[in-house]
Length: 108
View 1 (cartoon, rainbow, N blue to C red):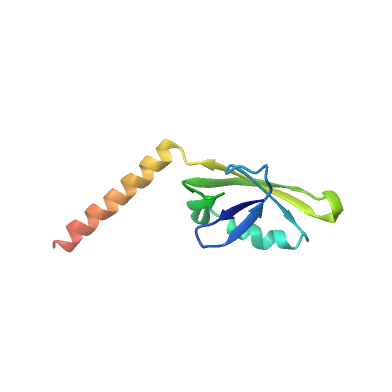
View 2 (tube, rainbow, N blue to C red):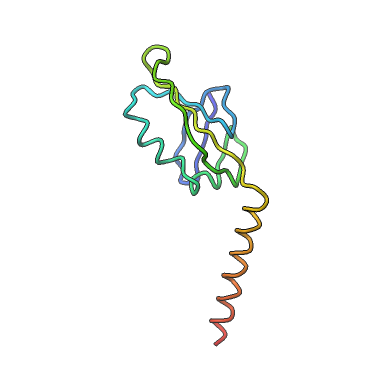
């Protein structure tokens, strides 16, 4: 099992074949899916630890569910991607603009 630790501290046990862009877990009950889906947000994926390695800039894309998985369990795979260079630059620009506004307004 691979451990995924999300930004809010929640941990998810993933299957050994998981990657940071394809996180697969096995649920005992389908009802568990709703609470797990709420954890895979852009904010929670912005800073994670996957198998002991830290990652930033992960974006959720979608998820797939295998209802007929072995032993009645539910196999869920969350598909993610890395932020594009353009998205990273846009965030940096917005932060810089915000800081500049604070300096201007604070100096008045």
